[in-house]
Each structure stands twice: as C-alpha cells, then as structure tokens.
Amino acid sequence: MRLVAREFEKGPPCGYAELPIDGIVELWFENTDTLNAAFASPEGKRTMAHAKTFLAEITAFVVEESRVA
Image 1 (cartoon, rainbow, N blue to C red):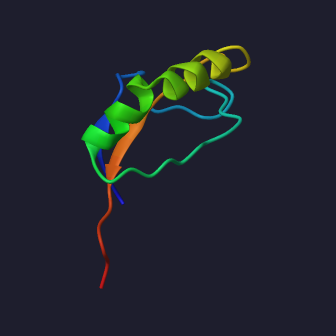
Image 2 (image 1 turned 90 degrees about the vertical axis):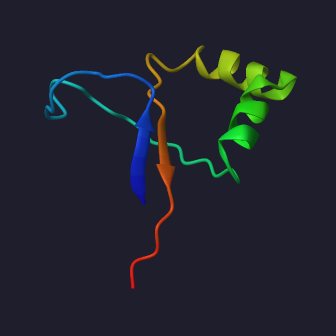
C-alpha cells in the first residue's frame, strides 16, 4: 500500500517512548466518498463518539492499494 494522505502532521519521526502507539485499526472502503459517507452516518458518528471515550488520540491515514509484481 502507498500512503496518499494523512489527517494532519504530527511532527518529526520518533520512537515509542516519545509517541506510544497501543493499537492500529484498518478499515477498507471502495473510495473516499464511501469512507466519508460511512463516518458522516449516524452509526459512524456514534462509533467515533464511543472511540473517543477510551482513546487518547486518533490519527487517520488514507492509503491506496498497489499490486507488487
């Protein structure tokens, strides 16, 4: 996969001690329109509200699938 977008810049690269990451979630959508529609839906809004009750920070990355021959 190739990274094509990031929610916002966090700063220079660093190790776990400076920026601990406890988990990564991967969601697949047909395109950015379906991604945006999913998170704009009542279910998507409820999911994000719930996530914020136990996550200190969320950083989203948008990637595009690419085949390696």
